[in-house]
Length: 501
Image 1 (cartoon, rainbow, N blue to C red):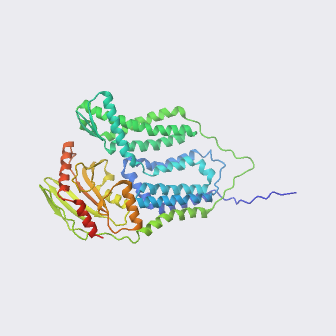
Image 2 (image 1 turned 180 degrees about the horizontal axis):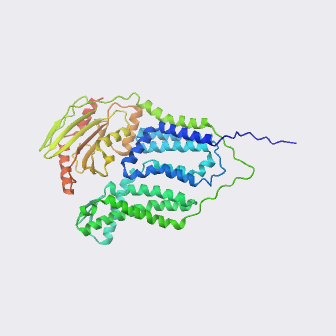
């Protein structure tokens, strides 16, 4: 008589894989603490991402909803999935050197997903795929599409006014009608509505639909509908200004009643999706006389943590020998006609001055950054000097009619509180190209080394009250006169950073 031999599988308590997951998640939070801290800070400071606080409770609820579908399944460790950690580590390091925090956060979240996959195994992970992937909404991403949303909204208003026969003029993001001028600011782009709508749409689809087709259809609706609805909302504001004869009266509190409009749109979206609802999945029935084995490999979870720590360790090695730059000579400025200049001696890596032009004061700050700093350091300096993250309603536009050889300036006009800040960056002593090209330059310098420190300059003023369009134009002309008085600012910066090596 022959006996079939089967390898013995040790059956362990399901509590052990759960304990491994809990310890592993705490360890990943510790490894990626800067990413976690930056995400929470954005959730608190930005109204576009306040819903992120609900992501984990929603994911837990979705897992609870699937308790019947996973009945009979047991965790089976999948150590082969550890190979997925290699591209995740490369992704994190590339994002860190490029100064892209969202990329770092997505890579960190990827390690969270990998930990679940390694510990739970393919079958159980696949059954919980929806709730686990929903955790992607913990990452406050999407700000990069704001310019595209602004452009779409401006074009939507243009088409709407043309269809209604209302005389108007459109220049980029500026819409002029007889009642006044409207500007499609970042707050008008609808990003906060779009991000919240997508998060809600995915939750609703996972909760009410089982087929991939219906889920995809509803999620697509949750993307398209808020974009079009925001265009209608912006068009309605312009039409209200046309009826009232005042652009400023129509635009007052547009964010507040924008949320009211958004709530109505979400309600209509839910009503539209209700006829497509499907019954929940039936519980998985285990075959009589069988029991799935529970296997656990604590070492596999430990390897996930080791791979996750590789990128931060390499980054620390790159930054270990970086020294703080300092001004070796004064940053010599000049006052334009009608303005007075009060300039402080440089203090370490920062030089400050104040231009007093009549009743208005402009604060000038030149900040040196470490020569091997990444784009993230520049982003942190920009946020600190402009306070843009905390602004409820901010618009960033290029500075028009800037004098030659004055760098590449952008102006941030913020509301609540009111402020106007012009900023420019120099890399290698020359005006920075901006965008991905600039980040690639800094990433290369951070790895290969460089001796010329980047410089970031901010010139800001804080009006006591909101400025009309005419007053804003006059303020920007005053800013141009300050820049023109410096002569070749590019040469001045190049000389200063060369002496700072």
